[in-house]
Image (tube, rainbow, N blue to C red; front, side):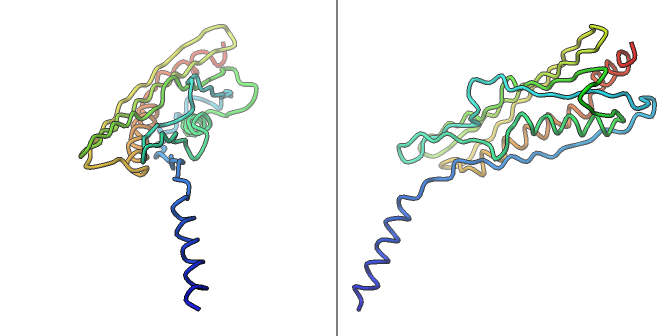
Length: 193
């Protein structure tokens, strides 16, 4: 009788040891919104996004002798496009497929460099995006947003540690975008030209 119970338990432990490590990072930054600008009078813009990175991984870590590629829980291109769209709608713009100004958010760099030693880890997250606004009258503006976040801790960096640093960096960048008025000023000046 004990063998009937022991065999399934051993099989369960063996399978648990073979379980694949989680390689998905839950990316969910806080999306800050700007104040509405009543002078906009409902100009329509279109918003697109692009990812210029060579690799869509957010981090690569060595766990138990195996190099793991950590990927985001959602497409970063669409996450940043959503943040920009929410901010421009909050300002008072209408968003549609045929806008008088086309606004594109481009990811140039978004990566967490994870360094682990015997007793400590260091995570440096760099975010670099461009927002290119192209008006129908031929005028164009490019605005760059860059930030770097760093954290250190004891022993090894968990997925949660990496998620926290990336979310902090993205939250700061999205907050900076919400406070910046240069894109809105460009749209206002060129939407009816």
